[in-house]
Length: 258
Image 1 (cartoon, rainbow, N blue to C red):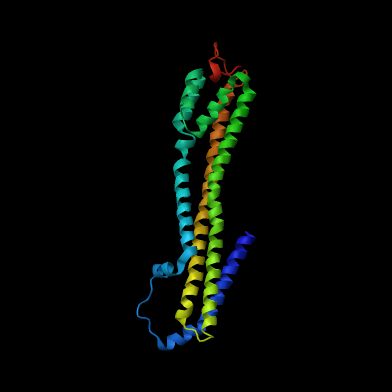
Image 2: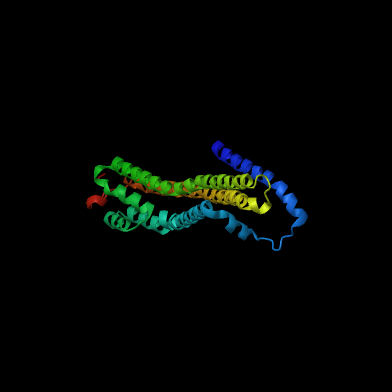
């Protein structure tokens, strides 16, 4: 957080320096120049973005793609479908071990992967089943959190790219001031000022959106992984020795050896 505040402070100081340098020229132009057409906001953005702004734009597209992909892939129907949970419980209570195992193996949800991993180790006992579920849940959680982490990376790079644009704008503006030997006009500095402020704006916009959704997506991953893991552990209790009657004939990998 302190590093982010330092970046924002640097960008603010850079913009303030450019505005302070431009004030004399602005005062001169107000006395003798009338603008023929007032630029729109998007005209200013397009004119001032340049290379850092293009990079920030591409990063923004990537951030939106990650956000959309997250909300499509991380939801109840892909993590813990209510109907799948109900069917699995019914089959386990009815001791239809093989049918349950085959159905879970054909599903792509997190809950199905956890349960099938546990039942696959049924012949090794309840503790082995529990350990398999825990390891599979940890692998799923790690993979999903890594995908969400890209939003954090983009959110932190956004202000840095904006700061790069600010620095380039300052260099351009002060170069124009030096070349004119102090007799500069507003139009001499407008390119550098636009480059500095527009890219700062774009970088901050990317950071706000990316970091905001990073928090939302991280919480959603945590919620659904915990719920799917808890549901699998709950059904796993049916395989604990003495918790429920075991089938009279084991059925391969899907049958607990209890």
